[in-house]
Every structure is written in C-alpha cells, then in structure tokens.
Length: 137
Image (cartoon, rainbow, N blue to C red):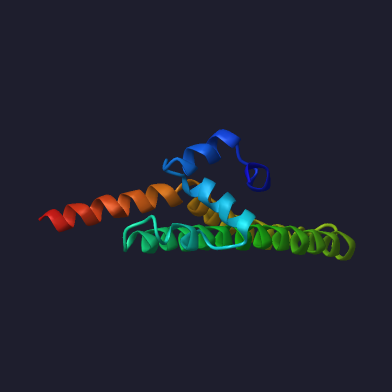
C-alpha cells in the first residue's frame, strides 16, 4: 500500500496503529484506493469535521482555478501583444502605438498577480483578524 500511495512504509504503519494522518497523506491514500478523502475519514472523524475538510478542499480548488485563470490571461496577453507589436512595426514603424495596450493590459495583469500570489494570504488573514475583533466587541 505504501508503494501505491507513494508514502513511506513507516507512515502507513503509524496510521494502522491509530496515529493521525495529515491531509496530504489522506489524499495520497484516497487516490490509491480511488475514493474521496471524506470516505476514508467518515468513521474516524467526529461529525462536522468532514465539513471542514470539504471546505479546505473547495478552497484549494478555487485557489487553483484562480491561478490557472491568471496564467491563461498572462499567456493571452503575451500572444496578443506580440501580434500587436508585429502589426505596428510592419504597418507604421515610426509610431509605436502598441506600447499603450501592452502597458495598460500588462499593469492590470501585474496587479491581479500581486493580489493573487503576494497579498492573497495576507488579505485573508487580515480579514479573519478583523472579523474576530468585531465579534469580540
């Protein structure tokens, strides 16, 4: 089983002896058996904890979807702006109009990337802290 799940034999032994498994480990075991993580943990977890696990999985999938959309948008920007550059250089080489859409669109993508990769976790933590402050009052 350790080989199928790409895990250490000691990890499998620890889980078999009643030890706790991380979400990554449970994901690897679930993938090896072809089931959901929730199905593995139904009997072992108290009610309501599956909901937390489902929320984490949904949040991870949403984050992955946002990252994929960002990379698609960046590739689209590169291809379109490269085409605009070629059109500009061949049709009116003395006037560089292609810079305006390239810079404006590029700045918008850069802001989105900063928000997604740099500020995303910070903003979420800040919102959580602020929510807790408001609930304490």
